[in-house]
Image: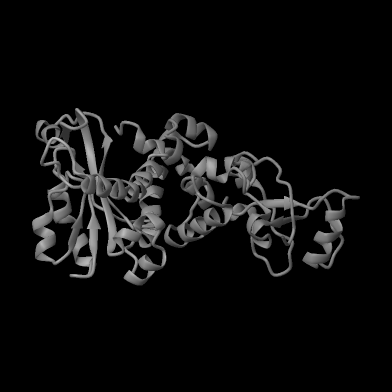
Length: 343
């Protein structure tokens, strides 16, 4: 990295407002009183090797004193975190445990995209990075009271930021949830799908438990006889390689798989005659697929007391292939907010 630094604890907000510190790097106009989204750092102590590196790199042109500070704009990527906040604990080894993001680079990219969409002001006293990190609630479903203490903001602000940031992150990430081309699908076809080379998507539905609605009509629409409780239901489409490529809008638990599929628009993305979809026995969508000339692959229905040898082998092959969509749903529910009952 350009310069590696160690952060000092964040000063109190009233001291931040009163401070008149500004960045001493020539040409930089950053000042502490202009906002809290930029952090300021003193030079390393005398005798430390990093001090001479700072002086050489920054080319301030005057004697360095104890009051001089450098703003975070002159540091690169992972070389710094905003001081005193929870995100300063993140490393490349634990960022996945906290947020489910694969790396710090992905976190930084999300923060950058978020900052381009949302105008960061002092209204909430949290930086763009803190707001994105606050959505660790999706992974761990910890209480908002706990998060507001962790990020030192009020309960109402914490709740507001979680709702706003979730909406913005959805806007950023929805572009990567798409059905890949036929060529890409074939290039990434796993071994278990060799008998089903024409399969483009594997479909399944999953349900999330919700609190009982106060409205009687809503309660009737969301009650799931399968789960014996109130749920919200989604249809998940996964490529043969296991990538989630489509998620339907939410429906009440009473909705049938057939109705959700009909309204999902998935068939519009498939190639007639060429493509096939793999489904479970409960998806009674043959008529829709026949109209669009899409092949349906599902485990055979048992018409006798016992499946024939050929049917049993076919069922086994389909089960081995369908494990990808089941695994994708399991990955989704690693986010504990989806595995818990949603208020």
